[in-house]
Image 1 (tube, rainbow, N blue to C red):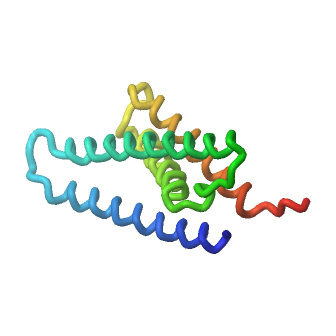
Image 2 (image 1 turned 30 degrees about the horizontal axis):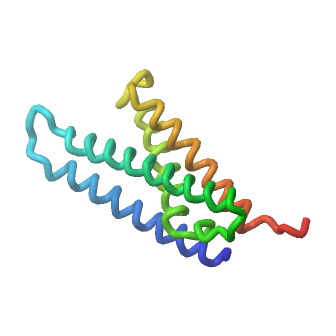
Length: 137
């Protein structure tokens, strides 16, 4: 179990790195115009919506298996680990943008970002609790 979590965590970080590189180079290849950077902002918002949606769906599946008291196939699933790491990464990026004053704190996206934080924290704790804490204690 631990090996799968480590492997999927490494793969998730690599995929997130490729997404970040794509967004970085997409920004620098845009034509200089009045709304330069709007494309990267829209990609960032789409990534946030995707991450929140994926996290909610996976937590719903996780809750379904927990309430049915069935074996949980999602506890070491790649998408569950990817969703948790992507959510944490996007929240950290949002905090950096807030501290650099690129995004105002009173924006309408605060709810989405705090939802993303809650989903990623719950998922990371769930993954850690299920796979790394010895149940015999």
